[in-house]
Image (tube, rainbow, N blue to C red; front, side, top):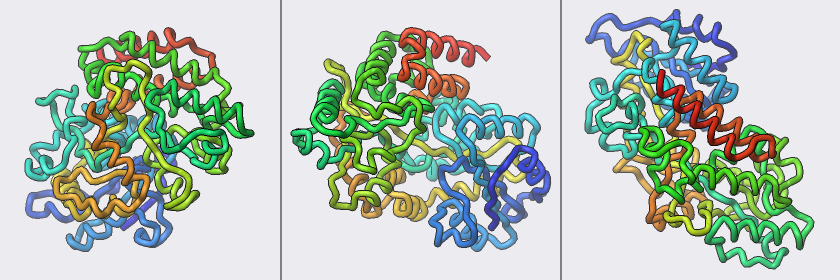
Length: 438
């Protein structure tokens, strides 16, 4: 089992051309598999993937052990989302690249429809049907669209972490969760006014917090299918709900509740972990970091991002399926790639994924809920059961990749005041229309 860092497309293409392909069906479980992971299911390992808790590498080791004659190479791409996408597209156009690519579910998968195989002829229906959420990787988000990726894991949820010690210092009862965004902002201002700390710690240089905010607020206005309906044309990208959400987002950026350098610092919770803020808006992928920093019984807890006052769907969460594994058209070993996907889909393997990372649950019908150990993940799943309006599948999980890239940029601009909300919405609509027309 080999694990490498992808430092550039040239190195990647050189590796790809060295693959040994199977030549007949009776050799289906021999040969080499090349997997590109965008930092989602694994990580760089120096030696022992079990010591490093590198899940995808563990699966490669065990697949090799179960199938002598098979070699699995996992490459962690490195770089940001846009760079990873460009590297894969360049390789795919050249007819090379990996056998399997691991990327974000939804738009980041469906945007590459021309480069991915339909999984339904390759993987048994009982395997796919046992895991919820496969619809998010169907071409065009249509029930009859080609299945371009296997959804893996229950997905992440967008949340607000709160520090009870800071809130108490400001005279706020942390057991009373704000019912609306406006109530949360009022609490944040109280923290700013009555303590030497910030209401929020925010790093919005790349616009990522805007992605979580906009997805939740628009979902509150339009429901959990808001963005898949936008993609299909049922709802316009410049729907009034988008402008309303972006105005609230601009107001957040212009307020005094954030750390003063919020628009200039990269996404991350450094200030919150340092105890310098009452709230931190992010996602469940921070569960482990919060537990490590504050302890399982410490002052930090989480709750779903509250919606705007008067939202029709106020009992809604946002986030949804995150991970997709796709088989590329460039693969010369599609049968072997399909066997690997069937292998990793086993419920006991997904249970191990949950156990290792503690950021999301299993999406397998036979998943073991006892694998959820992190107290933050437990409380999020309890809240999920109370989210009677469902979970909004995020804008940047649905739209074409170019529109997603623009989304982050305009988010950053709106928060800093460089772009007006109406201009941001207009740009996103134009990008969507251009990409859909291709």
